[in-house]
Length: 154
Image (cartoon, rainbow, N blue to C red):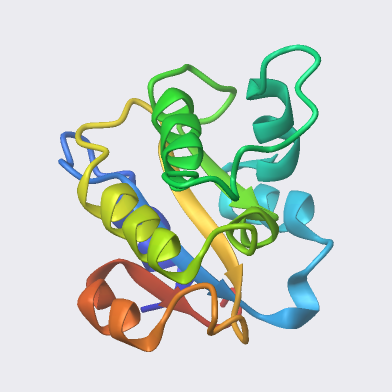
């Protein structure tokens, strides 16, 4: 599936699931805001959003503790139930946060995110570098193939 198809899919009115993943080409890294405009969606830096969600004065991210993935899924839940400038967010730099999780925690994150954010007000496209196979395992790519986009913008 191409990114425009994924964008249309997650933004369908009344869709139960409004979250997809884009295995984004490496040459798009750092250009997410420009790409979001081309797709008609809003870019959001996941790192910045996560840091804003931490309690004031927090010294650690909390991602490395058991159930650290819950902090990220809670962030995405909050974002999907908040009104933004656009009805869909292109979440980038999420891969940097996911690297802080243990492998089994990453798998739980993907399962809860792709199966467990029903009827979101704001839709999400989670951009992950296409070569970051340690972030989204091949088995998960097969499981969620209907919600994963590959390649460049057409």
